[in-house]
Image 1 (cartoon, helix red, strand yellow):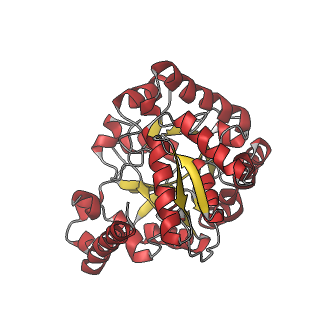
Image 2 (spheres, helix red, strand yellow):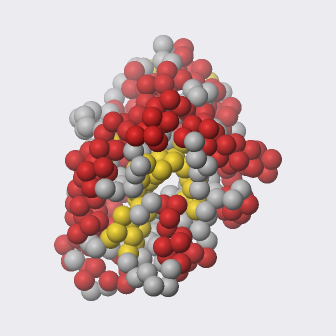
Image 3 (cartoon, one colour):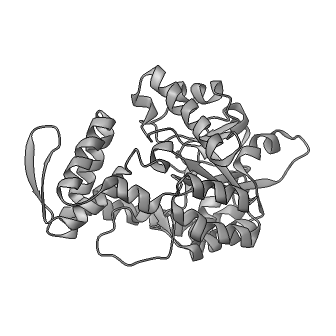
Length: 346
């Protein structure tokens, strides 16, 4: 995506959120919000201003998390643990609207910066864990790509049509190459693509697994959090964070069932919830929804935006989530998302 297109897309999203917020459309269309929503988060850490920050959308500040929780409470939503959601929605005597907070990938900052905010408000939260990250067997390619494009002034890389030299002198050039690396990883053999990216990073003095070690909680830290914080819940997130729609049936089962077993070993409790890596339609579909149900999971979530409703109980392993996006950290935007109106207009 070009810089101009990216800026136009961001402006369009921001404009839509502003329009809903300024119109206070939720007062005119209260049914649009359904029974509440599930939020997606990744990093929660103090903000740092950077000229080049390709993963900025994956990071919010602790202050903004506090703001988001307050916004949800002001909108009348009741915080609930994700794994409890199907039973709550199925209860015919239950009329409340709910909000669930979920965090993908098991970042250390979830325990350091997010957990204290959740505890201050008494809000349960679910962290989704990929064994490959926890055990330093799999790199977080988007973090590797950021480190590589941020550090190098020029890169030689085979994107699939032979080695080519690409410039990385300016933030715009770095972003363009980062985007190409993302497309490369997500359009072919993901394992091979990540291996090639890791190799390029190591050639530039960057340790991809070292990045995972720096950013992601290990097994001991997960166990400590599970013991110390009764609000913390833990869900499975595959073994290798692969796009499940692009793997065969045997690997699909192994990725889901193996991650369930790993999380149970880390925290001493079998997980009831699951998050599909990436979560968009190219990465997850009906086959994967059935596989999660067949594995005995109570609930599984995508990243396809939407609110909760009767359809949630019809497909509890295909629940959408709404991103708390680092590019839009304002209280009025959270309330616009909670209204559900942006998703009705998409």
